[in-house]
Image 1 (cartoon, rainbow, N blue to C red):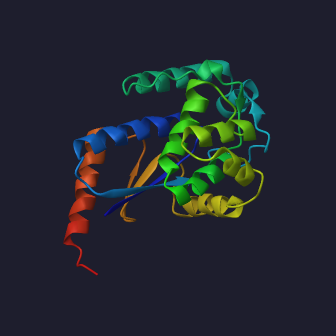
Image 2 (cartoon, rainbow, N blue to C red):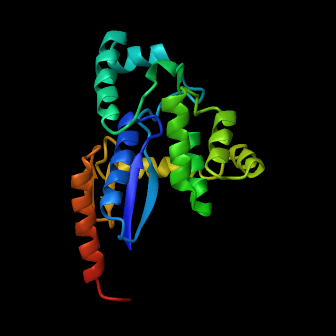
Length: 216
């Protein structure tokens, strides 16, 4: 079985674009058996736990609204080509993403990881919701098919907090300094929101490796 590890952040617009392009690549190779694991990477690891007002964040990150507008206009145009209608203007706060990564990791236990990732992307990029807030995270979990009470209980604790932080540290130790980053079979890395054709070619390579491996 092909293993795809995807390092991403829940506030990274290129990660949503990369997800859509991977989905397109998988439609080109529907017969391939694979397992996808979403891995934690924080674009802003030093973000305050409560997040930051959006305009203040843009000023710090990009040097002001004009520079941010140019950057996000390019992202918006790229997303439109993949059927994504970003609503950047609806975002009022840039969150700390640690809690959202904890939720994604927890969803692995029930096989709903990808669904949670999608729900978080939709909440943030389509509706401008604060995905650092517990209530928003609970609603994303429910939208992904997880139990509400269980989700509330999980998010009230600290489970996987250390593991998420360590996964982010390990990503940087591996040389990952931007996302998305796709790693196939633990061996081949493809950085950035690559076109579906490039992803499909990497899937073919990964499948060839798996097929050639001796049976255990």
